[in-house]
Image (cartoon, rainbow, N blue to C red; front, side, top):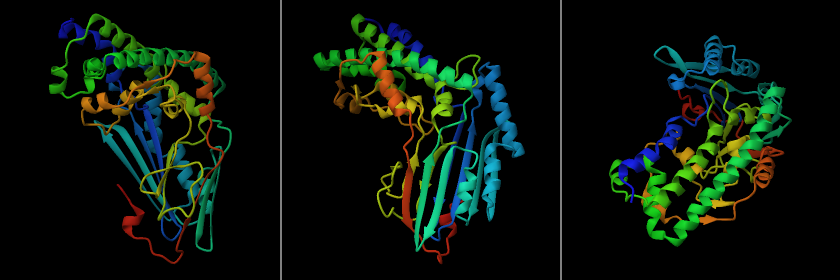
Length: 376
């Protein structure tokens, strides 16, 4: 049996990856809130990474330009909000040690045609109409045009290599799942070691040491996970992560879009994912990681790489519940070849043909301050 010290040393490689934030260095979100009278509030948020002291001149220049444009109001969102012709508008900065970390802009608009102009610099054809108390929002994606030729070529190369990494990862994870099917008594120790840095201290300290064979299995899986998760990280000398570049190539949306309705839709929405509250819709444009997420469960369940990234979210504070993880039903299919993975990923790298929702409005209603939802 190996000592705990050796086991901890063996986990250092994955820890180095996990200490990096999987969030993109520039995170953009767009919130579209419709009010009872048919007017709407548009809110864009741009969060800029603090770079964590990394020496990457290309990324530093990119982030400096984003900050400068936000402060000057010359960023793409500034131009979009101007075309909206709002009746009221707010803009706020959040700085840390003098560096801008977040820029939030919100506006209230009353003219439905304003949404078409707002998205005029994108490949989205957006229409918003109100007839006889029924509002309809329809978004028809066109071909994304945000990536340069060199960026498209780079994404093509990345997709080819990454498909191989995903295939290798699925094999290693499937091998571990098969082993734990044969030795369920070792699941607590093996999974605890695999997810060691996500556990509470008292749980981590009670983990039993692994055998040499188990440690080799965990190390092989960790190395494969690193290759898969690296698509979310900005490599040395680059200014975008591979996943960010893939959104420039495949994603027609300028940001992750959330649509909030004043009531439940009149019929099932098209294209959008709908939250349990029944009134919040999400349109997530395609990218490499999004494509992999959409394949969750096809070859492997649960998926450790997806779980790691999910747990790295900015609001994640609770330690991983190891007992709950161990109790999950594990399933693995024969590992696919790289070309099969690529074909499956490419099939998911397309937006929905139409995003559409209808809902009731009351043109004579008076929206309240709570409805408007100014959050800053």
